[in-house]
Picture (spheres, rainbow over the protein chains, first blue to last red):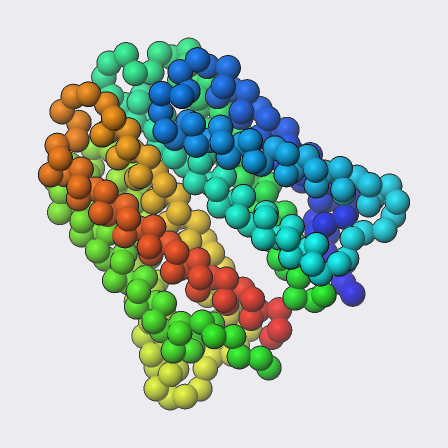
Length: 152
Length: 152
């Protein structure tokens, strides 16, 4: 059986999961430390999705770390199907959340009026950037696992 | 070699492509028949992405229709790689565009002021719904082709 770098149980996958956890947490903090995030649907949606992504990535980071330490990567078809599907669904949700947030921020900054004080706006922008980075990593994980799947 | 329904050159794929073309065109028309779409970044982005999706889906619908008529599905690895990659990239762009548009519409409808006259707002909403439907179909095409790929 071929060994795909980045698939479940390898050290590359461990790095990807760690990156996802870090970026998602950063995005959540940048968004929720601002006070007004619950006024806008997109921002609430981003926070909800981050609440799903962070535990998922963190758990899989633990699994990967354990696999690397023990030296025995997980190669059970059922588990890989669940992980690949979960990654795929979460990556779509995360892309949707990141784009909605970016679009809302852009609109708030364009409109005249007191909608986006520059202090909050910068935070929101950082949050959106972190969400995009996190999406990029989770999409990579998803692709690696999906690629390994038919060979099992 | 297994035959995956929905992959390039089958009649299911032809239906998917036709659906993509119809929904994308509808979304583009609903958006661009309103006059104000170029005032907002997200709406311009949606129109740009639709300008990529429509020719792509239409061309592949022609290819699929030809394959079904001739009775000889395309099974060359190189072509399938290009189609699967193109589908995947376009589905991500389309999801991003649909989410940005939906988020911008939601925000415009929430804010007080003359930002979203109800005549335009309904059109924009229909456009976003069509974009989501089109995304759903193009994601299905992408998955079917990706699934077939490792067996070639």
